[in-house]
Length: 277
Image 1 (cartoon, rainbow, N blue to C red):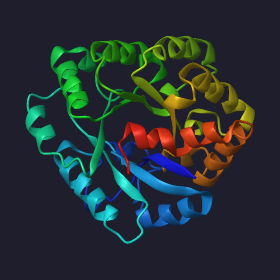
Image 2: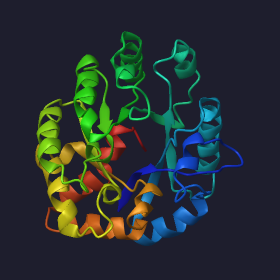
Image 3: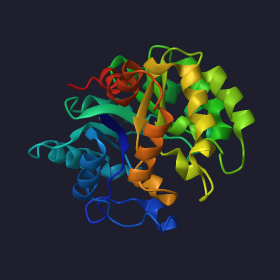
């Protein structure tokens, strides 16, 4: 049974998402009700909501929405990975207002800002504060930015990190060689975990199980079973598959491993990293 560590929900009447206008395939509401129906069918027993890079003034609204979903009877929702702006002088005030019974982690998407944003002293000091707060920091970068991610991790050795989407490999462009070298280096940092989440979105539309296999196996080989977690990246995964297909692919890729390894990957590591009950 899986904990989905990477679900995006969209409610356009309540929250503003400026970037969605440039992605017509995703530019609609994505409801928790629809997700839960599919999730229960395929063996998902808990979920973390991943921030959707909403307009900054809506971050608190997004977290409040997640808190409401957590209160629903028999809800799968376990908490929020909140958006944040560690590059802002107001970050201290922001982090001090967070309800840690709701917010389980923090993310700042780094491929939508200049590369030097995460290299400033202010950004790094605030990411260290995230670690001191007991919260992990999700890193979302493109393959070409993996060295930037590594530099940030080295500057914040006491913070727990989670690398989203296997480091967004350029699967469609056959970028395995460069990606794999960067991953091997990055994985040497023991405070980093890897999220195997929706990587079908980075392949060509005619991808197969064997297209994704070397990427997943390289992540597991380098991070080990104690530092990998699963995520759907729904609805982004629907760009090249469905939630059901991504889950079926995942189960096929781990079919021959031990039950202990499966449990660690599917749920136990997520419980530890995000302090879930």
